[in-house]
Length: 267
Image (cartoon, rainbow, N blue to C red; front, side, top):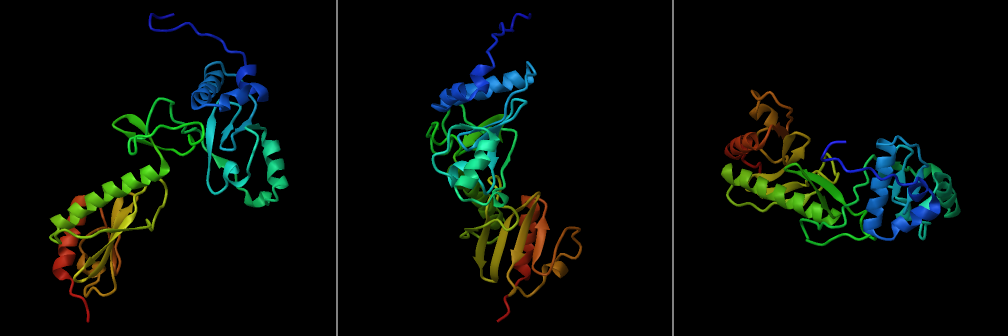
């Protein structure tokens, strides 16, 4: 054993893989993190095979040690009140039927990660910690090789604020001056990690701008005199009559500058 290695202490499987013992791990965020780490070590270090459980109606533990957060439109804890803290998958489906829900419409899906925050951190946006009652309310983002946890509303506020500041600079650099950007739903992806798009009213008409995967989508209203497909005929990018994709902020600034010079609204 190397100097930096600590002696391994074996934890009996009954502690983290039986209903009665696991219930005590759902009483606090500290204990829930303990359960997650115990099952992870059991599965990935000792290669134990464990039972599959539904925890607090928000996570699924598999036989390999993963502790996956349930996502999508059907979150059992949000659809069925007073669920037992620890259930088998069969017991969950029995609860679904007992609640009068159509099992065919209850699409249960989960990932590999719990996204449960450590008990000693706070949300970088609002400065508030998590508890066992809201530890499901997380969006996990990587920043400078550090994983950060945000509340969902805090994450939306941050990504919107950052994107708004970036696009405001783009418009200013393109010669529009200081413009008012109104957030609208992202028309390509509305996941937790994608910022909203923004509407800008200009003298020539409305412009909508926002990230679409790796490109910035610029869309103009029908009142613009020149179609973007013709205006940017030499640009080897995706484009149409009223939209064009820019590869990054510099290209977006360049395109907006050209649009400003060329656009005269039709009466």
